[in-house]
Amino acid sequence: MSEAFVTLVTNEDYVLGALALARSIRLSNPDHPLVVMATRTDVDLESLERAGCEVRPVTRISVSKEFEQRHARSALHAAAPYTKGLKPKFHDPLDNFCKLRLWEYEEFDRVVFLDADTIVVKDISKLFGYPEFAAAPNLYETLSDMHRLNSGVFVAEPSKHTFETMVEKLDVPGKFWRRTDQTFLESFFPDWHGLPYVFNALQYIYFNLPDLWRWESIRVVHYQYEKPWEKDHPRIDELKPLIDLWYSILDGRPFPESLDVQ
Ligand code: UDP
Ligand code: MN
Image (cartoon, rainbow, N blue to C red; front, side, top):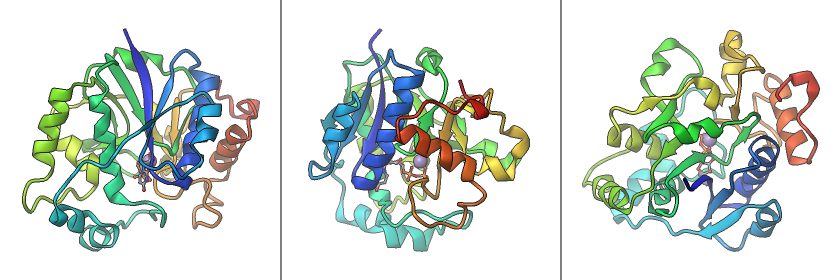
């Protein structure tokens, strides 16, 4: 079985995120490579190679002008406002669709995609035993979150045939994917398999559903909405232990014993 972790970076901010992710994988899952899909070469991709990543250039999937206009940052935020948290200025919704390119990587039997704003704090190799398409719920506030998946962590079986089918279904006239790749994947895989939420623990669980935040069982921490490397954001105080953890991994320190993450 050929297996890999895959992430995506399209600008310098997410390179920093991927660097912390790469270092966390080195500590927790050293037997699997991290492939980084990168849309630009004028960012510090060497830092990722030095951290042991395989960097692969990718281009955006070609879509119509109308599709681009509907999913441009300002248009998307106006049509489907984010009411629960803030998306950083450097987040471009159109870049999210590049994730679909991993289905072209047929040399891997299975891949586990991880957003560049995640860190892996325990062994997650068992994810490679899950079938396509497996993802955790978009759980961070109430039980009704369980109806939806979060596309920050998912298991996929690359296939060019699947990729081509996706491209055909993506840019349909008038179609608006309000949460970009996430809404698209939910529609493309309506009978998706549910992963336990600990494989994609969204940071808002930490203050909204604190009973669910048990360090001993959490495997992936996902810094959805505000990013830990943002200098100033409204949740910094509430999320301090999680932000400290992210920095300790970025700085190459081992997982802190006090958090019992290993
Ligand atoms: N991404 C990127 N550049 C962008 C937007 C997204 O590289 O401008 C990639 C990156 O891997 C990121 C993922 O797509 O982690 C999804 O975006 P994000 O994690 O910011 O969304 P959230 O988890 O907050 O919904
Ligand atoms: Mn994310």
